[in-house]
Figure 1 (cartoon, one colour):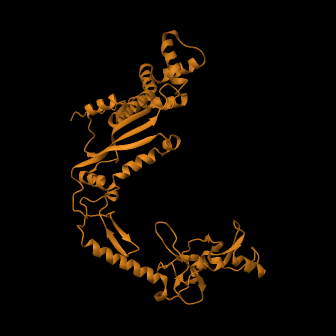
Figure 2 (spheres, rainbow, N blue to C red):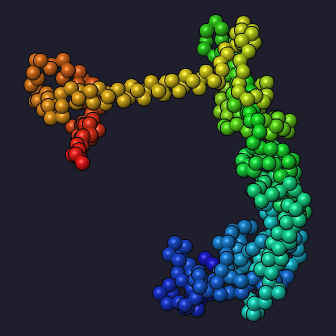
Length: 391
């Protein structure tokens, strides 16, 4: 129960009878301020800065204290990011967060009139203006033109208060829409390629046979690291700076296998940049001779596409055969044959066709309701004849 609820209940208020600036919360069984009142209050920091109400970050529970407006101690990020401020509450004199670090500051409601010159809003506005001015200053020194877009390598350093422009291939490969790199001046539309590597997977054999404990090694060659083609020079830069990320990706992908099998090991070997994956037949024969099972990623992709195609054709084959029967018998006759066969009667002259129809298309796949739409698609469009003019 918050301090506001304790105060109102002590004064004799109930959830049906209470001041207009509060409302009863059935979920928490307590009073809370209305949204209109939240927007109207003026808050004051320990150092005397004012802040408009309205934008509240909910409340947090920390060190046994509920920091919220109803307890007259809502917290907001300190604009100065001063962790050792003696005016702040002793529990909040440190930085929060692992990446973006900020300092929480405990505010109180104030009766002072709002003054923009002594407010947090002015400090934040000045900070944004300074940030924008420095952005224009650094962008004027880069290889920028009116067709250039945002560059991922240019980031704001909040600790130093300046823009940091440093070429980072790991940021570029995640998606850059510029035609020319604004940092290096190199074209991003020239020769394109990809980063390829060979994935070697090794584990011990565990089948209880004579060969139990022997290593099983497979090698999948020519695996692509990026989904799409990238500038050739950018791929080369990525290998120089971020080659270890390829091994980290393999470790993460097969982390479950490593957890259950301590002998399991995944290695990313022969990392290279190519336009398309190349095959080395002599090396493949040598690997096979050494007891390594060799696969090529391009062959595996082709096999998967072929299997998908055959599965699709097999799935659509019954419908195609039914369409042929529609053309042979006609719509009405086919429906009559299906209904007669359901009743147990089948003419001898079409017994073979009906048996095939029953076996594959009616009992397992098609229903009478679905046949209507199938027959519609099979009907040829009506020919329209126009009167030829003699004049």
